[in-house]
Image 1 (cartoon, rainbow, N blue to C red):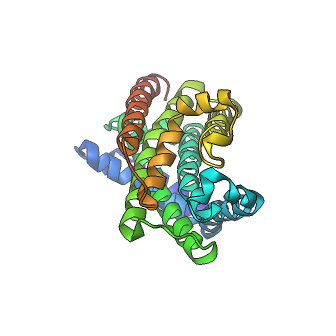
Image 2: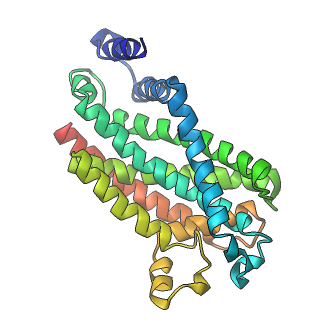
Length: 277
């Protein structure tokens, strides 16, 4: 029954009469709403999508609990306080990667091919995909933060305002990163290649950042890589906001790097998608 409703929705969107002189943002709204209905229409998918980051956070907080005694972490009054803001950013990274996978599914499912026959901007398809995933990311982050407070003893010293700003910053960073993976998708166009490329990008960025260990405990060459790692700046900014620590230039730097990634990714994605969708 769910599959039948999905096909009916696709058929309705593929009807040219459904797009009479629609503006760009109307197209984005309709397509993003469709993506959100698909994402939240399956209760099992919603459950596991929300549970996955909580389970990973619980696992990492227990496996690496001994890190809490290190000098660079002890000031956070518990490893979970050090870990949670970083986990929010890694969730954003994972969700950004899924943006590419979702777009690829629509390409191979024929949905984007049908849209080429309609009087709409193909770029609106990409914007809608990234905005829908950013909305989904926001829900994941709120659930993860609440679960961390209730079950893991996470105590954001920045209070509700600081944690809220950290979540907002993470959503923005995640949305910008999603353009990178959307661009990779429009360029590669194969599920296996996309998966391999995404993991090659994601895991080195995650584990060479300040997410799980203080930089002072890492070898010199890893610290050098971390200094050039964009995730390090996003994680430092999120920690500073959530835990009321000195912000410095971390937020501005994180947003500047994310904006540069979004501009480069969206430009490449728009050009490639227009030619190959």
